[in-house]
Image (cartoon, rainbow, N blue to C red):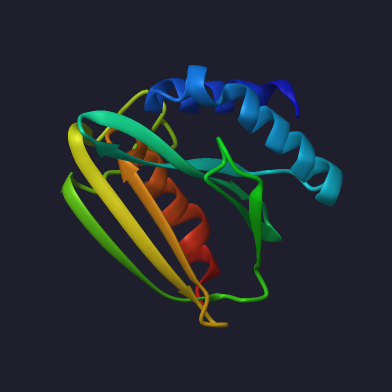
Amino acid sequence: MDKATVFALNEYMLKIGAAIQCSSRVSDLIRQYEKLYGDEIGDIFITNYIKDDKIHFENLWFFSEKRWWEMQDFLTEDHMTLVNLKNRVQSWTVQKKDYDFKDFEGDYYNKTAASASSTLSLSVILTNEQTLRFKAAGKNCDFLYEILKEHITKNEG
């Protein structure tokens, strides 16, 4: 993992409030991914939600040009699923609350369209009928929007 990747990962986790809780586990899983595949991870996304006024982190996603890799309940489990991009995106659905799609020309680390009450859910159906689910709360909505733009829409049918 190069310095730029480490910096971007740390910035992301700080912005969504995951740095202390998730940092070492995410680094370990990145090393496992690199040993298995050897290709570069383009983006990382951690699904999160708010329950009882507390942020909960759920699944970790890695996105590369060839594949997406999901680690379910990544803080406590070793349950990994590969999504091969031979199976293209057939359709996707978004549900959002208190959030507007805004573009910041790649500067979504420093700017936000999200508030503390913002939520964004994304369901993706692939051509093999596999369904992928992403959810975000608070500032993480901006990052899920970037995943939608950079990985979901660019891999449509």
